[in-house]
Amino acid sequence: MERLILGKTTSEWMNEFPLLSSIVDTKEVFWVNQKVKRFPDAIEGKNLSWEDVEEAEALFQRFAPFIEKAFPVTADTNGEIESPLKEIANMKDALQSEYDENIPGQLWLKCDNELAVAGSIKARGGFFEILSYAEKLALEHGLITKNDDYGKLYNDTFKQFFSNYSIAVGSTGNLGLSIGIMSAKLGFQVTVHMSRDAKQWKKDLLRDKGAKVMEYESDFSLAVEKGREMCEENPQCYFVDDEDSKHLFLGYAVAAIRLKKQLDEKGIVVNADHPLIVYIPCGVGGGPSGVTYGLKHIFGDNVYCYFAEPTHSPAVLIGLMTGKFHQVSVQDFGIDNRTAADGLAVGRPSQYAVQMVEHLVNGIYTVEDHQLYRMLYLLNQTEQMKLEPSALAGMYGPVQLAKNHQGSPNLEHATHVVWATGGSLVPEENMKAYINKGKDN
Image (cartoon, rainbow, N blue to C red):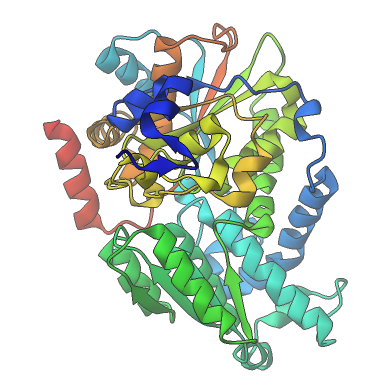
């Protein structure tokens, strides 16, 4: 007898959503979200406002003096952690040649692989959540006011204070790095629960930074569950819940404010005739959803956002397409959730983030692992850039959109922005192996 998934057989689900057949067969697909609404109708009833995003940006600014002292690498930016936006015209030519597709418009890379300290997009959400918690504790205990110079937090007195509290998080890698690095620097006792997908070098780096690492021979969901259980036993423990976090979401949303400033500085116009199209690698969904939420607030219906998932980990795609969000997992449909893209190896989507963008995200496509390595190699050859494999998922977007031109904007004057989610902390020997693998594909 066929097993039931929320009261339906797999066959019944496939009859209702024909694309599911290809998804279950782990084939590459391109899904257009038919539930997209015009902005601001799309955010009606959501428990978040643009003022919340602006307050998140203000918190980052308050902590800039602390970050500058704690991480001298940020001195040139006065403690602001932000990544450059770079045009990659040579890579555009390579993509057109490799995949025999014409990609109209300009191609840019949002280089979150270069974000200081954490080397990935997780520096946005992860840092914000920890800084927000640290501020809350310090304010509650009368140790600071919001008008203080937060540089004062970088001393032994505050480190001793924060050492009375614990942080826990479940991660496949990059979120754990951001939480571990910032928590340890502040003085928190931090434990990162890591799934089988996490790379060894990330575990080693975390331990080197002062975090405790717990390893599991299971996937992301179990790592999160174990982290949550640990915190429930300790009233002084704060759990960063990647599956259900408003704070992570807000940290990512601030990226939209920063990107708008960079586009303005480069004279890039965004309007109905010059659409902005953004492609973001997607794991549990927090990062891409937060970025999308922010971008839609700023650019409205003139920005189009697409998420990219591995063919073996299409968690957000299945959750959004079926409308069941976190209630369904890829494993429910017999998909193994095994991928070289460790940061995207997630079987069940975020409960909070995905519902926030149900009517905002324009579509989702899936990509096979070998394509990630191939594009990594092409990017290194054409632009001399180094990303980790999962960060190349967004690079497949312009190709897929050109191939599946359904419900998309006029591309002739489009600005394509691929979000490079991580890579600068990858050890050199690992990076060489990635590039060589892509060369042989």
